[in-house]
Image (cartoon, rainbow, N blue to C red):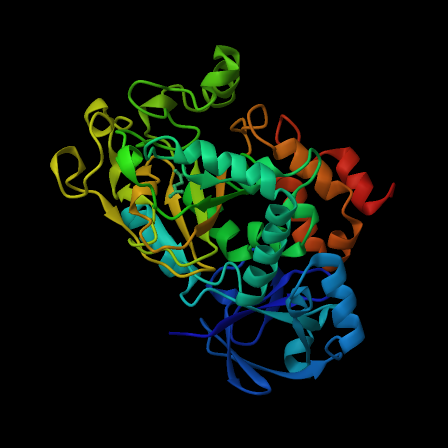
Length: 441
Ligand SMILES: O=C(O)CCC(=O)C(=O)O
């Protein structure tokens, strides 16, 4: 396994890329040429060209007092989010780079090359990307989520009580901390770790390349989902049929086209109007119009109730058929003969084509522990998002006011979150949010 790293320029957040063995450049997105590996304490070698660069530590880590101040703002462990910095000291290599962009923050990259992930997506419609959240990011995000839960313990107890009074149903037995928070609050405004994971430059490169577009946006604010352990007893210890679906924007099941059923047909008409000019037959599932990126905050294993999939079903002509939702799911049996679960550790995410049939299995979390995830949905910017149903606008507005989070992010990260999450109904970054972050200029 490789310990690959990314190098982001301190001033801009753009990533160091080896154009060839002797020339360096800076990029917003990370393909293989942006991937580096330590050869020794002062030398990094490029994963594609094999060319090396020499670096020296730059700056000092936060003092104990500074670390405590960072934790006080962003929550426990946040000081460990501050990256180590290195200056490029090799003049021959530095010459192509602006003088003020030769200090780099080092961060963990996935352990496999971006091109390997893209090849997997092309071949099978899914891939697991590691290190989307580092251990430090996980610790800090989990601490923030726990704070929200502690503050709303009574409300959570009522949610659990209602769930315990009914049988297992897919998408139930789940705690959604967003629902425990006050209006106007968002994890995006609590810690920079959320934005950093949403605009991971390798994942964005993969998503844009798989979808074949250069402009993508999130459908909703990131959804933290906590699958409770399966501990029901008595008559509720049984599983209701159902839960199999394809993700937005595709028809949900063969019975239901819209993911926005509760909003009435107008919302689906708006979605349709956004896609039809380019893809009149989009409901037939031929065009690539969406991806789901579900990032594990705790280990995903079959025993912990990892998501069930029918892998390869992104190539099927129709959404999940009636039969698959007619009887309780038993993997390997009858309409569920091809059902599998994927294992991947906390911090990794499964990135899959939204057409893929899948289901959350609350009855399978026999680990005795909660299974935590951050669920995200991404579509080309021309595809209408889920703002009418979910919390995208509220998340963007909370982010707009989070000045301390802005200061902890790079310019590239802010630009990408503006474009992917703080955009308006036509997919353009909102000017008022840009002004709130960057001022009038
Ligand atoms: O929580 C899960 O296992 C599945 C989530 C899901 O159905 C989705 O992201 O669409």
